[in-house]
Length: 176
Image 1 (spheres, rainbow, N blue to C red):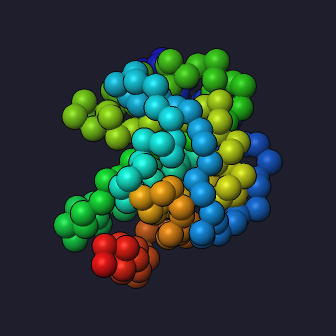
Image 2 (cartoon, rainbow, N blue to C red):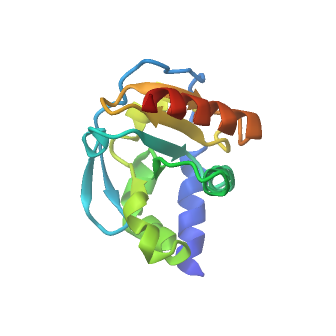
Image 3 (cartoon, rainbow, N blue to C red):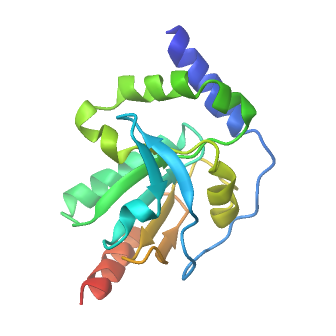
């Protein structure tokens, strides 16, 4: 329970920083960032995604997980074929001091079979925050990257069936 309290506090504090105006980064390259998946493997993005179309679901605060879960359920229910990754993106000095505890809290709530698809970003969080903006932090940032790492779809208004269908249309056009 103490660990969970620290995780919640750290995520709440990271969400209290000054918001960055939202942006729509279509046709931009995803920034080069370093993170660690929940299996404790160091990961460099977007090089991890090179050569394949990938979907990145960015969450800036813990409450974004609700939105991310709805996207993942929608993708599953529609049998959308795309490699999907969750990026808890937590900036600031306080969360970095407790990143081990935060990651352990995530491991406790996520099935081990999914740990490789959850990549935490701490040190390079500001690169992603500047790319997308942080207004309305409870909304996930849904980013589709083509095989070269260019953003071909972006959505940050919460889950909607219409947005999911638009994403599927973009995926179908990329596959042609």
